[in-house]
Image (cartoon, rainbow over all chains, first blue to last red; front, top):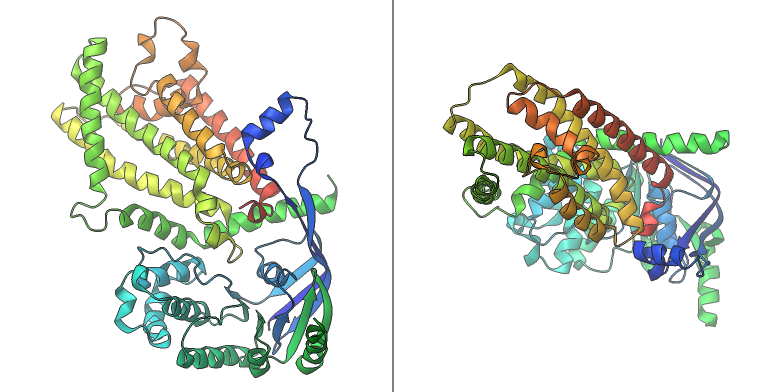
Length: 248
Length: 268
């Protein structure tokens, strides 16, 4: 049973400017008596969000650039901790936020799989079992033994996606990853997400591509300036979102 | 501090440490990969570093026998053991100062452990030191030094300096995430530290300013490993200073994790 409860969550952080990021700057400022008093400006990235997600929810996160979609996903994943409010999550989490994450050019596909598998808590034995599946699903074939330097963008996406979803997380969090990859992989990827969602898990993914979201989401959350504008069944939220968007 | 904030304080610490231990296979793997990746295409692999080290040690021994007039069987073991331990600590510390920004993508991808990343750095440098230790073995064979029971002390002192280095590394890693120039500052300090610590020279050779060696925890941390290997009985002062320094550094590390763990992703 997977569930996510966010109760009145806020996320504030301080933006430090370049001077405040250096020890010399701090020392110099202290020496001159702290003339530059102002400390980094506090930014509110998430503004009183309450969400309750349960098994079977396939959520599309929509909203303009900078609305807080990625931040909310990272908050769900536990990368960021809320400044205020409570977050409770039950279920294993799989993430795919940055497809270039950990993609060192010198690594081979196999080594990348090892790195990521172990990072996500799989054992070496489990990985040995998974590697053929990952190779088949990604369609990389013998490229899996080549260094990532020779991979195209699409191949990287295929590899990253295959690794992230192979662990069958109960909660799958995806951030705008459907940009690259060819059509046939795209179909397999959407099927995979549907499959995971079908295994009574939770899927949340951010996108600007509403038609794609319509294919496999049943719920939408519309964010603006770190707050929820609308949360509900996909069609209802999308209708309102499209109305507002066409006004611009 | 209120009860609630004390609770989050402990929770953060517990999360970081439990993730560090749960993902041990990952930290070890990362350490191993870090070490081998650079040398993947050469036949002797990481022993390249050991070969470079051997050349350095020969040169240093040659220079220091000339400088202090002491015989080679005194200088060579002193310098060899000293440099290997110093390298273990200083390389771990300077790499700790950049480990978080270097692994930013991991830290932004899933909830993970700061102490774990520092541990992987220390593990890597311990593995490199293990390669280097072959030089100590060769040297002892060459000098026909027979095994001594005093060597057993190393089983205690080596873990102690590893804990010390990890603790200081964690504090440094977090500090360096907040302030970008900490890495450079660390490197300069380590450079000065190398000269101010009896790595190459021996404390009894100082004609004045003995405090440079006495009030330097690194002197004592190196001593507790080097003394037994040179067949000397352990020095109570060296052990006392080493244990106290380790406790202090460890407290600092745990405090930094508990206090700043959740801020680090915003700093990177």
